[in-house]
Image (tube, rainbow, N blue to C red; front, top):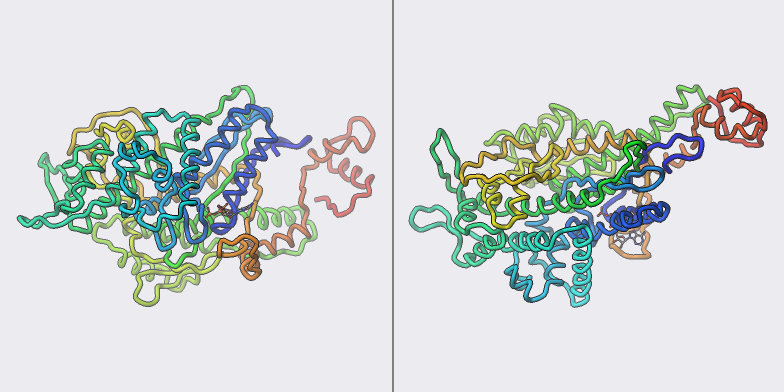
Length: 588
Ligand SMILES: Nc1ncnc2c1ncn2[C@@H]1O[C@H](COP(=O)(O)OP(=O)(O)OP(=O)(O)O)[C@@H](O)[C@H]1O
């Protein structure tokens, strides 16, 4: 794949796409296994590349209505080669669905790791992490499953532990990581009630124990944690000002802390994996790579939120990449070469991408603009969309009482609920939380909050610096919005992919009931249509699948002329072709 004889080696990328549950992650695993089998080089590294998967799935996958093991993040794995041997790998992650930590829709679950922990930890370990009966925790209080399911989770927990050891997580790091997850669960049970004296909030009597447990697992003072939940401290002209939260603000602060803590643990796991898989290269030899993209599939649920918009935007972008390579570039080449060619039309999704991405009037830009106004609400955002996209055939204003809008995507119309868009896009970390966690006695938590976040949202750990409580100037206005981070990381991804030679794997989902052996032909046909696969078959049938340069072709097949010094020219190519019985070729 990294270069046949006569062809220059080139970096490759494999784009695996399809609806949620279509089989992208399973195909990625099979592909990786196959490539590793072909390599037979540094067997330890190859094994490590394969073994990080259980870890990523435990922390990044969850049960959804569409797939029992749905990836709730996107990943791009770059396998790096020198002399046809794999020398290392790099993993990039995209948009972990952090909101799942605090809320799941009907028929869905939280990230697998929470269930694995309850099933796999011993009683002593649970006591150490302050974990009680799983049914008590609001963040995972959905039905817990049968004995068989618990056994399966227990086994999965063991796999995760093995993978953690193999990746090189120290024992203390593993303990800290699970303490943070236990802290997140306890934090979710903290509720608030007004103080009788001044109406400000306090922790409700019934959840005092949960606050204590959360603070204990996070390694911070209980009263300091409570302060971050019920009020915002700021310093103006040297004077400390305390602003009390409303009930809603306190609950939002609680959930934000849970989401950010989980998100940083996930980011840190990816960093550790990258450290382990970092390449050991010979600087004299050129590095080539095979990238495999397994990104969340197109989603259309009963309720579609900000996350679904980002996921569907990524899929739009990939469809555009596919169209560009399969239809645009190939047909442009035929036209430039003046070959007889009947143009094959395809459904171009550029207008939808413009609607979402253009600046300054695309949907994400308008969302950022609104997110920057403290007074703006989801309603003002929707009003802005309705006025900006009036007459745009790919946008429809919401109908009925639910605040929302619809987008006509390449794969169909999706109705979005606008509630929570601004809050999710701002992705605000409650004031003073960073300072609180940096000073935590749990070393990992401190490390996670000392880290900076790159423009693409990647965690970049660095050395610890102590922060004086209250002096933390970190606030939401200086950081990138979630939408901007996602847009930027998509841009970086597309740049990487445009510089490589692409291959496409289109996964087709056979039915929507998650049933083996059942094929819904209508559903299949619909996917073949919107993916452009019918047109792809036409261009593959009528077009020319291999388009080598004259030089490349003459160098490779010149031997057929049985004469010395075959010149690498068009003339030689014609001579070679006319000397064979080959048909179905054309020369540009
Ligand atoms: N090649 C395969 N052989 C057998 N079963 C498969 C195969 N591919 C997928 N499946 C089944 O379909 C399920 C969903 O597959 P997978 O998790 O790969 O979907 P996905 O496209 O990655 O979905 P998502 O976008 O939700 O992550 C798997 O858990 C498995 O049960």
